[in-house]
Length: 379
Image (cartoon, rainbow, N blue to C red; front, side, top):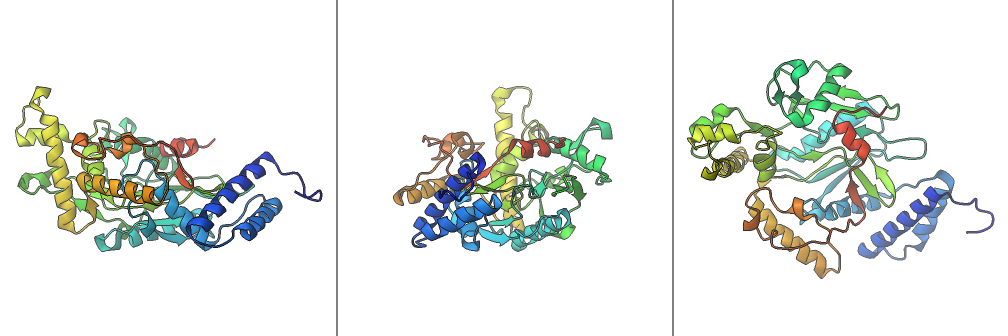
């Protein structure tokens, strides 16, 4: 640093370091030549503005590598196929809502789900980027006791109540009412936006043998678009960057519809199948779980919607590990998330240990985002 430059703050010093590390990684992996000129330009921009702007190529690379580094994601083999919608010029809630709906349309692709991310304006000194409060772009409402008997997804009860307090009239009161998006832009005042029906593809669940299964009225949406994680690239946080791959069947059949604090469908299915539910040693839960997951895979296939199964995805993950290690890259992974929530020991990912290191760039959960997903205001 020359004597004519102002002293860097601790924040600027940290940002410079993270930016430099990222630029060097980008230039090394993308064979982009000598990074020094770009690093000098980034340093100058940080000195002047307290932040810097990624090039289009840096943004694309950073978003893809953040998926590659997602320790909780088993489906990283195709990280390089992630499509990037650069919407960094958008920071108002109305436009974020419109572009989020367009994200869903493009990702759905008639059922052939595309891995996709839409990146909105980043945080900058004195100018926070927009925030999407919803955990995912598509979630189902959870109506609590204040609205009558509990209906829907209990996980979303807090955000549902908050949307109602914002003025949302609520849906028709079914177990699968679409939640509106709750979006906060720079003014710090969250607003709600209903998703257009044509932006959300849903799959009705049927069983390959049991005709009565349709009478259960179960369904799930096609695109799992995470909406409340920050995309961190080289020290820059993009707080609104919804992204999706496609579903693994167990996410729906062994968690969303089966967990006792979610839709809790196992007792209902076991009863219809005639299982003895009075004694856990009958393994009625296990048997009902298998049939529920068979129904999910069968129904998505029948509807022509992309879905994968946990056995296939486990093998793909080990291919990803081998591929990355052959390139000399570390792979972080969280065992408790990588191992599927059913038949874990029957999959090859179970019989391994993993390095829990979180590499950067990354998708990061901030405490404030988790609070918003519960419907808790920012003050």
